[in-house]
Structure formats: structure tokens, C-alpha cells
Image 1 (cartoon, rainbow, N blue to C red):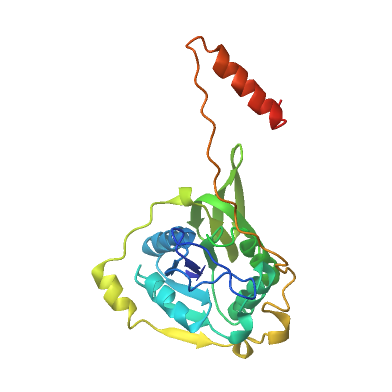
Image 2 (cartoon, helix red, strand yellow):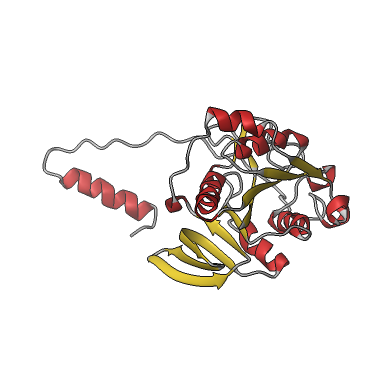
Length: 261
């Protein structure tokens, strides 16, 4: 089975977020890392490979500096990588991102596209389903358990009330949630081996995408204005007389003022 894992270079979640002059996220304001959700899709891909054989390829869309992220993904034991690097992709929204990824996959043979359900910088959860639409493939999203047997995919899809079971045939696009597994740590051997694993770099023209179809200026969504979150205000402390009535009255007044009751 040949599995391709799309991954993303994102700012560290602990870093202070900042916007560039064009209102896109400044990805160099903090230390970039591999999108945390992608560690779960990589782990699931490796488990499938260990059971059934085959190979796992990482796919990344980003600037040249994203090669560090690609090599980090390879350190988990993946076999090779494809990186889409082009000035024209800067500022691409979810739809444009899915468009480029689909074009990069058009000439690739695969049985499964396995990816995290969201990125920690945008959290739209849209790219997996959009990618499936562009590729005209079935999509299994929010997957918390995945069984692969003779080309049949059986998934538990997480819902607000539990889960539902869905089935389809490969090839398909599958996005996973954190409940699916516990990612391994890269070994020292894996880290060293990642440095020499094959990495193919492609531009937009290499994958057949016109720069006029993607990027900041050509995305369907635009950031018009952004306002920093206001500083946290000090809370109000209520001293009760021990009876509970003072605290209860203060709570009722607060909820009433906020129109909760």
C-alpha cells in the first residue's frame, strides 16, 4: 500500500502570534514546527505500513524553509517526500491549498491520503474534504479509528455525541483526530536517516497550476481587518458572610447583567 501524508509547517502553538503587513500569519515570528495533528496521521500511516507493507510519502506545500518540517516528518520512518515550493503559493487559503495539493497528487500513485484533520494555525478543518473533492475521491473525516483490509477502509468518525461507522474502498482521503493513536518519538537512527531520504521539490508550473489561480490575491477568502485580542480584565472578588446569600445574589446580578438569565 502506498500512503501519502500531507503535512504543514506551522508556528509553535506556544509562540506569540503576529501578522505580516499583508495580514497573513507571520510564520517566522516564532519557531516553526511540524503541525501537531500531522503527527497522528504519520503514526497511523506507519502502523498501516508495518502491518501491510508498502511505503509512506510525505507531501508538504510551503517555502524552502519548510524542508526542515519535511525532514522532521521523514524522521518518523517515512520513505520519501514531495515539497511544493513557489512564491505564488504565499497566502493561499484552504481552497487554494487543496487545489495545489490535488495537482501535486495528480501524477502520483497512491492507495490512501492520510492527514491530520486540521492545522494548529488555521483550524478550518476544510482542506481534507476539499482535497477529496478536487481528486474526486471519497473522504472519511474526523476518524478516530481506522481499519484497512484488502482495500476496504472502515472508520469510526468522531461526532459530538460519540461516533459513527463509515466504510469505503481505497483510494480515499482520510483525516484523523488525536484520539486515533499515540504518536511515537523519532529515534536517533530515524533522525539521521531522514537527512538522506529522497526529497523531490516541485514548483506550481511543475504540477500544472497557474499562479493566477492561487496565492493571497487569488484566494476565495481575504482578511480585511484583524484586531488583537484585548488584555484580560481583572475579575471581581465577592466576600460572602458565610450564609451563601451574598455570593448567590452577586452571581445572579452578574448573570443578569450579561443577559445569561
